[in-house]
Structures are given as structure tokens and as C-alpha cells.
Image (cartoon, rainbow, N blue to C red; front, side, top):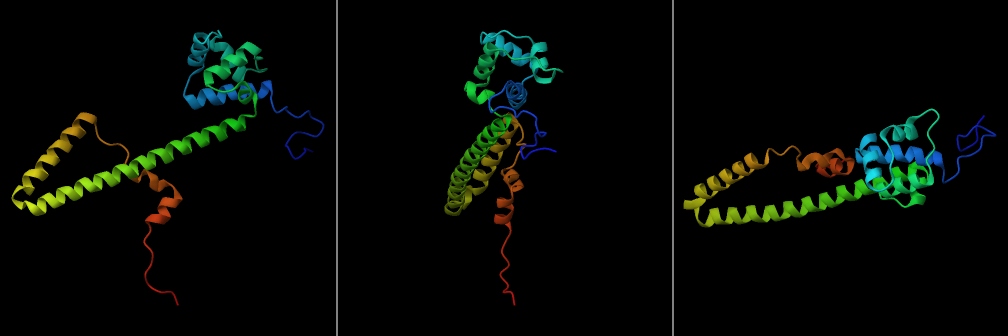
Length: 185
């Protein structure tokens, strides 16, 4: 039998701050940052907390896991940009933090995209007004814009993501669906 925490009955609970949490946190933070065990070891050494790649691997995956000494815990926290208490805390806290950071970044980029789309719309309205006022120059203006955009795409490379990438989220899918104007009986 196990209790509500999932621990076997009679088994000691993992303390809120523990070495086991720290070992798991090393792996989670390293993977989140996209670092190899070698890269983490280099960064620890550069920060003044020398450790080798093999030791990082044994901390994360060894059977039994290699223990983390206090200096290493301080070094890992520093390299990951975390307060020591947060580094030693439950690994789930890391996921919550990363989810919040990623959500904030997506929302910030979305706001930027909306502002950009609004300003782009204003520019295209000005182009349309110019074309209406000076139809004799419309072809020249449109051709020049097309050439400039083609050159910009050639210089920067093709756009790989469309603003439509936001449609993967249900709120956007619902917002994009037209409402049915026919009354229901």
C-alpha cells in the first residue's frame, strides 16, 4: 500500500529540500538550457566550481547517484541562475518556472506581432491611397515594393514560420471560426 503522496507506507518522505531533488534538478535545468553534461561541467569550472563531465553524469544518472557537496550545490545554483533554496527544492517547481517563462515569452511575441501587423496594415493602406490618388504610378510603386521584398527575402532567407503558428492554440481556433448567422429553431 502507499499513502496519498505515492510513497510506500512506512517509507520516509523526501524532504522539501533534498539532495535527490538537486540531482534531478541538475538534469532538468541542463536539458532545459540545451546543454550537454560536458557543457555544464565547463560552465561550472568557469564559474569557479570545478567538476568534470563524468561527475555531472553520475550526479544525474549514476546508480547510486553521486552525492553533491555544498560547494557544488552553490555552483549549480549560480550557473543555472537560481537561488540555492530553489535549486534544492522539488523538481516540479522547475517546470512551473519554465512554463511561466515560456508563456510570458509567447505572449510578449504575440503582442509584438499584433503591433507589427497593425503598423503593416497602416502602411498598406497608405500604399492603396497613393495608388488611388496616382494610378499612373501604381504599377511602378507595386513593382518596386515587390522587388524590395524579394531582395529582403533573398538576403534574410525565407520565412519559416507564419503568424498562423498561433492557431495551434484552441483560443485562436475558436476565434477564427465564423459564427453561423442562421437562427436555430
